[in-house]
Amino acid sequence: MNIKIGKDPSVDTSVKGVDYKLNTDDRFISRHHAFITVESKSPLKMNVTAKSVNKTFINGKVLENNKPYALNIDDALQLVSIQNEPISIKELLTFAKIPLPKAPTAKQYKPDFLLLKDIYDNYKKESTRLTKKDALINGLRSSVFALSTASVGLIAILGKEDDTTMKLVKIGIPVVVVIGVTLFLNSISPRDKIIQLNDQFEVDYICPNCSRSFGKTSWTLLARQNQCAFCKTPWTEENK
Ligand SMILES: [Zn+2]
Image (cartoon, rainbow, N blue to C red; front, side, top):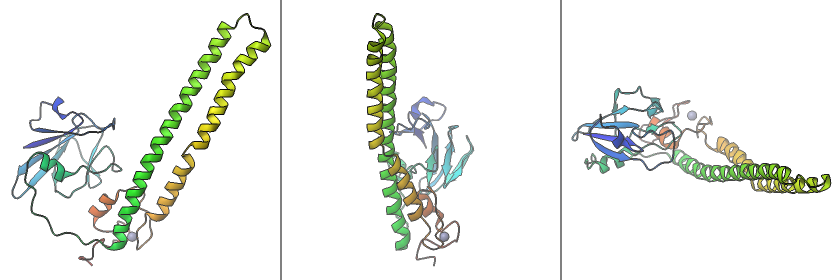
């Protein structure tokens, strides 16, 4: 059985299976981005095939298109970028009514590694919020600029009979408005906060052992690696 993943996987009729429609506005995610083939339900055996030029990853490794790769239930399956939240394979299987394997032994992560999850989640949440606000302000800024450019042009055309002073006054109004609005938008812009947040994250999101920064690698992906990629310190107590 195939589980097709994408914004509208039904477009691809060359692959038969259930369509798992992703509710996302990420324009890089394809209508049919990848599909999972469940070879056997018990024991669960799956593979994943990438279908999009916009990349598909397992545990941070990019997949070649149209080539099946073995997939485990706790692998990090990511579309477009390894910065993106992994697709929940459990959710996919549940959606396709495929019984999940019996709960594997829960991993006992070390407290200092678990702490990194909070740091990452908080960063991601705050970063998304600030970036949205920044985009909104940039949008406003360009609209105001466009409007005022248009009105200056309009004044120049309509106010032909005006004397020079009148013309300057009329043109001056939109210019002053733009400067005012721009200054106001700059004052509420989250730019500085974004820089601050990123700096703080770089300081906080580091290996508890070797203090090296994990960059923007998601916590889920770090957890999949089982250990620090730099100093090889394991994240769990069990393989100590
Ligand atoms: Zn380390």
